[in-house]
Length: 223
Image 1 (cartoon, helix red, strand yellow):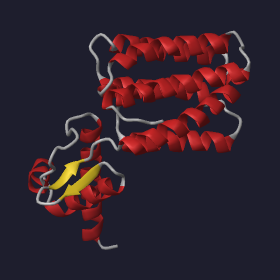
Image 2 (cartoon, rainbow, N blue to C red; image 1 turned 60 degrees about the horizontal axis):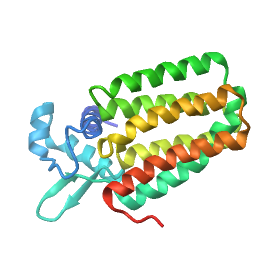
Image 3 (cartoon, rainbow, N blue to C red; image 1 turned 45 degrees about the horizontal axis):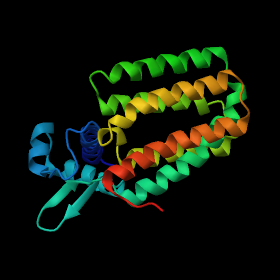
């Protein structure tokens, strides 16, 4: 690789990180037109690395091309979201149930501290921050899963969910408060050493409730 290619590559990576971050935090909302020349000017680069960055984002499903419009931020694909959440509810429920007997008092304290931050976040709701905290919370619950294959599938599910959209809670903010309360119920089950089936059922219903709330909001039928 030549020095020029290395420089172009690094600029493309910088553009990619910048664009993906602004899509994630809602600066560029679904349908927003991505004007290459303007983005290049803002980043202080040529349009070449910006174009490469947008191609990567298109491959990840975050950007789409529309005829006579150009590159725009993609909206949520309801079908993809449905399949991703259905799958994640199953595998994350299993991972949480397997992890449950291995969750110690320090883990419970850490999870409660995260959930307290989520509760505080409700006062001046920031869906992107809430979503990050939500993932941190669930990571505490499933990270002790002794089955590496299931754990890998959970990580893949969260990564796919992130590529579909950064925050469902942006569309159904009312679901956020319910989610925090359900977190406490999950922690109570784990603390009381409830059987694995009960923990798995609660974890799956918790995930499914978010899916149901979003589909009800969009009027999507998932029967």
